[in-house]
Image (cartoon, rainbow, N blue to C red; front, side, top):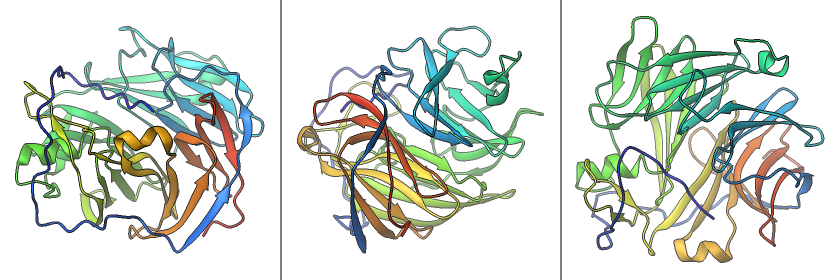
Length: 352
């Protein structure tokens, strides 16, 4: 299972194993009150997925963000039967194109927002216009006046919620009209006694997602297993709760400034993916040390909005991205027992 993390730093040599002491007590496990074993129904096994990073649901459509070894970054499928419809979001340096996408999310108005951090480019795609071949089918923004390196952008009403890489801005609102940042949030969980470790651990392959109603932001780490939930309104973000499931163990990347972390052989791998509905949070969690991933599969957990695990699902595929429909149907892209990628769905007997 590969995890592709790309930023404007060069990672070449790793240092010794690191795990800085903090005052946090880690739970060491995720335990849900109920468990259900699910078998998948294959929707599409002919499309050549390479690294499915995100999955989104828009009405009758499934949209998969998979840009690794692909000419286009997003791929549309019919939700009912998995039929491939079309791809969009070309790689390149022209209008509406990307060299790298670090975040993608659906919006309340039926659009897709994608962000290229190295070019500081936000593109908002209109899916209806794409399906009907109407041009222009996107709006493009260049992020300016940022206090630090912005790694993710999520559309919120007429603005964007930005995710930064240090304590000048961890989260904040960016207004594209006057190109200003406001309501900046700078607090980090104290996972280490080193500030730069805290910044990096909450950035490395982290999943940050908004609920469809825009009232909750969830962020989950890949190294270790930390789940943070934030309340959102026009005044900014406020931490609702945090759950510290697995202690981060990690290596440093030599020469990276600010300090950057990466996985080690002793790292417990946490959240592979995250998906929010308006009444639940779903997380694909490994919960094993990195060498054990080869013989393991991530487990899907359903959390309530206080961060409590209420149900777990044991799946027969190693999913890399997941989405859950309003009726509780689970969709995912991952590998089967012989390592072949497929788009599939799971029918659950009850949501909770």
